[in-house]
Image (spheres, rainbow, N blue to C red):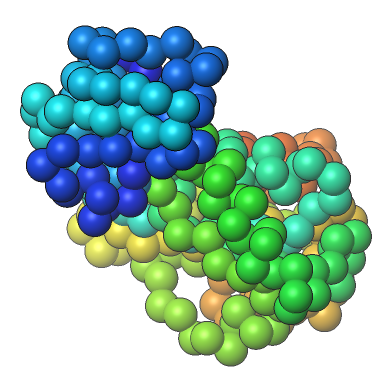
Length: 253
Protein backbone atom coordinates (compact mmCIF):
# COMPACT_ATOMS: atom_id res chain seq x y z
CA UNK A 1 0.00 0.00 0.00
CA UNK A 2 1.35 3.42 -0.96
CA UNK A 3 1.96 5.89 1.87
CA UNK A 4 1.56 9.67 1.85
CA UNK A 5 2.09 12.45 4.37
CA UNK A 6 -0.11 15.23 5.71
CA UNK A 7 0.55 17.42 8.78
CA UNK A 8 -1.48 16.40 11.86
CA UNK A 9 -4.07 19.20 11.56
CA UNK A 10 -4.80 18.32 7.93
CA UNK A 11 -4.77 14.57 8.56
CA UNK A 12 -7.41 15.04 11.27
CA UNK A 13 -10.02 16.29 8.78
CA UNK A 14 -12.94 13.99 7.86
CA UNK A 15 -11.96 14.12 4.18
CA UNK A 16 -8.34 14.47 3.10
CA UNK A 17 -6.71 16.25 0.17
CA UNK A 18 -3.07 15.55 -0.62
CA UNK A 19 -0.70 18.45 -1.24
CA UNK A 20 0.09 19.42 -4.82
CA UNK A 21 3.50 17.75 -4.56
CA UNK A 22 2.05 14.53 -3.13
CA UNK A 23 -0.81 14.59 -5.64
CA UNK A 24 1.59 14.95 -8.57
CA UNK A 25 3.53 11.92 -7.35
CA UNK A 26 0.33 9.92 -6.80
CA UNK A 27 -1.15 10.68 -10.24
CA UNK A 28 1.87 10.95 -12.53
CA UNK A 29 4.29 8.48 -10.95
CA UNK A 30 2.16 5.95 -9.10
CA UNK A 31 -0.82 6.26 -11.49
CA UNK A 32 -3.35 6.04 -8.67
CA UNK A 33 -7.01 5.93 -9.63
CA UNK A 34 -10.31 6.30 -7.80
CA UNK A 35 -11.13 3.29 -5.64
CA UNK A 36 -7.54 2.42 -4.73
CA UNK A 37 -6.49 2.18 -1.07
CA UNK A 38 -3.63 4.25 0.38
CA UNK A 39 -2.26 5.17 3.81
CA UNK A 40 -1.74 8.71 5.06
CA UNK A 41 0.72 9.36 7.91
CA UNK A 42 0.83 12.50 10.03
CA UNK A 43 4.31 12.04 11.51
CA UNK A 44 2.89 12.18 15.04
CA UNK A 45 1.81 8.56 15.44
CA UNK A 46 -1.39 8.81 13.41
CA UNK A 47 -2.19 6.79 10.30
CA UNK A 48 -5.30 6.94 8.11
CA UNK A 49 -6.31 4.12 5.82
CA UNK A 50 -8.07 5.79 2.92
CA UNK A 51 -9.76 5.25 -0.41
CA UNK A 52 -9.04 7.51 -3.37
CA UNK A 53 -12.27 9.27 -4.36
CA UNK A 54 -11.06 11.74 -7.00
CA UNK A 55 -7.83 12.65 -8.77
CA UNK A 56 -6.49 15.47 -10.89
CA UNK A 57 -3.04 16.90 -11.51
CA UNK A 58 -3.11 19.23 -8.49
CA UNK A 59 -5.23 17.40 -5.91
CA UNK A 60 -5.99 13.85 -4.86
CA UNK A 61 -8.99 13.54 -2.57
CA UNK A 62 -9.37 10.70 -0.08
CA UNK A 63 -12.12 9.22 2.05
CA UNK A 64 -10.92 8.03 5.46
CA UNK A 65 -11.92 4.42 6.12
CA UNK A 66 -9.98 3.77 9.32
CA UNK A 67 -7.81 5.73 11.74
CA UNK A 68 -4.99 4.09 13.67
CA UNK A 69 -2.89 5.48 16.49
CA UNK A 70 0.61 4.10 17.10
CA UNK A 71 2.04 4.22 20.59
CA UNK A 72 5.39 6.02 20.79
CA UNK A 73 8.56 4.15 21.60
CA UNK A 74 9.30 4.03 25.36
CA UNK A 75 12.45 6.09 24.76
CA UNK A 76 13.50 9.21 22.86
CA UNK A 77 16.90 9.59 21.21
CA UNK A 78 18.36 12.97 20.28
CA UNK A 79 21.08 12.79 17.63
CA UNK A 80 23.64 15.58 18.03
CA UNK A 81 25.28 15.25 14.63
CA UNK A 82 28.22 17.30 13.37
CA UNK A 83 27.44 18.40 9.83
CA UNK A 84 29.15 16.47 7.07
CA UNK A 85 29.97 17.34 3.47
CA UNK A 86 28.13 16.50 0.27
CA UNK A 87 25.04 14.32 0.46
CA UNK A 88 26.22 12.43 3.53
CA UNK A 89 24.20 14.69 5.87
CA UNK A 90 21.10 13.92 3.80
CA UNK A 91 21.93 10.22 4.22
CA UNK A 92 22.23 10.64 8.00
CA UNK A 93 18.82 12.36 8.22
CA UNK A 94 17.25 9.62 6.10
CA UNK A 95 18.67 6.73 8.12
CA UNK A 96 18.14 8.40 11.49
CA UNK A 97 14.47 8.80 10.56
CA UNK A 98 14.23 5.13 9.60
CA UNK A 99 15.66 4.31 13.02
CA UNK A 100 12.91 6.43 14.66
CA UNK A 101 15.18 9.04 16.19
CA UNK A 102 13.17 11.63 18.11
CA UNK A 103 15.23 14.73 17.35
CA UNK A 104 18.17 15.77 15.17
CA UNK A 105 20.40 18.70 16.09
CA UNK A 106 22.96 19.51 13.36
CA UNK A 107 26.21 20.77 14.82
CA UNK A 108 28.54 23.32 13.23
CA UNK A 109 31.69 21.78 14.69
CA UNK A 110 35.10 23.32 14.13
CA UNK A 111 36.11 20.53 11.76
CA UNK A 112 32.81 20.43 9.89
CA UNK A 113 33.64 21.06 6.24
CA UNK A 114 30.16 22.51 5.72
CA UNK A 115 29.31 25.72 7.56
CA UNK A 116 25.76 27.02 7.24
CA UNK A 117 25.07 30.74 7.50
CA UNK A 118 21.93 32.12 9.11
CA UNK A 119 20.44 32.85 5.68
CA UNK A 120 20.88 29.23 4.57
CA UNK A 121 19.87 27.53 7.82
CA UNK A 122 16.10 27.52 7.26
CA UNK A 123 16.50 26.23 3.70
CA UNK A 124 18.69 23.40 4.99
CA UNK A 125 16.17 22.48 7.68
CA UNK A 126 13.34 22.42 5.13
CA UNK A 127 15.41 20.18 2.84
CA UNK A 128 16.22 17.77 5.68
CA UNK A 129 12.59 17.75 6.79
CA UNK A 130 11.51 16.85 3.25
CA UNK A 131 14.00 13.98 3.28
CA UNK A 132 12.63 12.81 6.63
CA UNK A 133 9.05 12.90 5.30
CA UNK A 134 10.04 10.79 2.30
CA UNK A 135 11.77 8.41 4.69
CA UNK A 136 8.75 7.79 6.94
CA UNK A 137 6.63 7.16 3.85
CA UNK A 138 9.14 4.57 2.66
CA UNK A 139 9.80 2.77 5.93
CA UNK A 140 6.47 3.21 7.72
CA UNK A 141 7.89 4.76 10.90
CA UNK A 142 4.93 6.74 12.28
CA UNK A 143 7.06 9.43 13.87
CA UNK A 144 8.67 12.39 12.11
CA UNK A 145 11.78 13.63 13.94
CA UNK A 146 12.21 17.21 15.05
CA UNK A 147 15.01 18.78 13.01
CA UNK A 148 16.58 21.95 14.36
CA UNK A 149 18.70 24.67 12.79
CA UNK A 150 22.47 24.11 13.07
CA UNK A 151 24.23 25.35 16.19
CA UNK A 152 27.74 25.03 17.60
CA UNK A 153 28.61 22.29 20.12
CA UNK A 154 29.22 24.98 22.75
CA UNK A 155 25.78 26.48 22.15
CA UNK A 156 24.20 23.04 22.50
CA UNK A 157 26.04 22.46 25.79
CA UNK A 158 24.88 25.85 27.09
CA UNK A 159 21.26 24.70 26.78
CA UNK A 160 21.86 22.49 29.83
CA UNK A 161 19.50 19.81 28.59
CA UNK A 162 18.84 16.85 30.85
CA UNK A 163 18.89 13.29 29.51
CA UNK A 164 18.79 9.98 31.34
CA UNK A 165 21.82 8.87 29.33
CA UNK A 166 24.15 11.20 27.40
CA UNK A 167 26.83 9.64 25.20
CA UNK A 168 29.59 10.73 22.84
CA UNK A 169 31.21 8.51 20.21
CA UNK A 170 34.90 8.87 20.96
CA UNK A 171 38.19 7.88 19.35
CA UNK A 172 39.99 8.38 22.66
CA UNK A 173 40.69 5.86 25.41
CA UNK A 174 38.55 5.04 28.45
CA UNK A 175 35.51 4.28 26.31
CA UNK A 176 32.81 1.68 26.84
CA UNK A 177 30.42 -0.18 24.57
CA UNK A 178 26.94 1.41 24.33
CA UNK A 179 25.47 -1.80 25.78
CA UNK A 180 27.46 -1.38 29.00
CA UNK A 181 26.15 2.15 29.46
CA UNK A 182 22.53 1.09 28.92
CA UNK A 183 22.86 -1.94 31.21
CA UNK A 184 24.55 0.07 33.96
CA UNK A 185 21.79 2.67 33.85
CA UNK A 186 19.12 -0.05 34.00
CA UNK A 187 20.82 -1.69 36.98
CA UNK A 188 21.05 1.60 38.89
CA UNK A 189 17.57 2.91 38.07
CA UNK A 190 15.50 -0.26 37.73
CA UNK A 191 14.64 0.37 34.09
CA UNK A 192 16.02 1.48 30.74
CA UNK A 193 16.69 5.15 30.00
CA UNK A 194 13.76 7.03 28.48
CA UNK A 195 15.68 10.03 27.18
CA UNK A 196 19.08 9.70 25.50
CA UNK A 197 21.40 11.84 23.42
CA UNK A 198 24.38 10.83 21.33
CA UNK A 199 27.11 13.14 20.00
CA UNK A 200 28.66 12.19 16.64
CA UNK A 201 31.66 14.15 15.41
CA UNK A 202 32.60 15.21 11.87
CA UNK A 203 35.30 13.67 9.68
CA UNK A 204 38.39 14.03 11.84
CA UNK A 205 36.25 14.01 15.00
CA UNK A 206 35.60 16.86 17.38
CA UNK A 207 38.63 18.96 18.28
CA UNK A 208 40.25 18.16 21.65
CA UNK A 209 38.75 21.36 23.07
CA UNK A 210 35.25 20.43 21.87
CA UNK A 211 35.59 16.87 23.17
CA UNK A 212 36.73 18.11 26.56
CA UNK A 213 33.75 20.47 26.81
CA UNK A 214 31.32 17.71 25.84
CA UNK A 215 32.84 15.25 28.31
CA UNK A 216 32.93 17.88 31.06
CA UNK A 217 29.19 18.36 30.55
CA UNK A 218 28.64 14.77 31.71
CA UNK A 219 28.49 12.89 28.42
CA UNK A 220 29.91 9.37 28.60
CA UNK A 221 32.47 8.30 25.94
CA UNK A 222 31.57 5.16 23.98
CA UNK A 223 33.49 3.08 21.48
CA UNK A 224 32.21 2.09 18.06
CA UNK A 225 34.77 -0.65 17.58
CA UNK A 226 38.38 -0.99 16.51
CA UNK A 227 38.13 0.75 13.13
CA UNK A 228 37.58 4.44 12.47
CA UNK A 229 34.14 4.91 10.94
CA UNK A 230 32.99 7.66 8.65
CA UNK A 231 30.70 10.10 10.41
CA UNK A 232 27.57 8.89 8.60
CA UNK A 233 28.45 5.26 9.37
CA UNK A 234 29.05 6.12 13.03
CA UNK A 235 25.60 7.73 13.30
CA UNK A 236 23.78 4.75 11.81
CA UNK A 237 25.84 2.23 13.81
CA UNK A 238 25.24 3.99 17.12
CA UNK A 239 21.52 4.49 16.58
CA UNK A 240 21.12 0.86 15.53
CA UNK A 241 23.01 -0.32 18.64
CA UNK A 242 20.92 1.83 20.96
CA UNK A 243 17.64 0.78 19.35
CA UNK A 244 18.61 -2.87 19.66
CA UNK A 245 19.56 -2.55 23.32
CA UNK A 246 16.53 -0.48 24.27
CA UNK A 247 14.08 -2.80 22.52
CA UNK A 248 15.67 -6.03 23.72
CA UNK A 249 13.92 -8.08 26.43
CA UNK A 250 15.15 -7.39 29.94
CA UNK A 251 18.01 -9.75 30.76
CA UNK A 252 17.57 -11.74 33.92
CA UNK A 253 20.36 -12.13 36.41
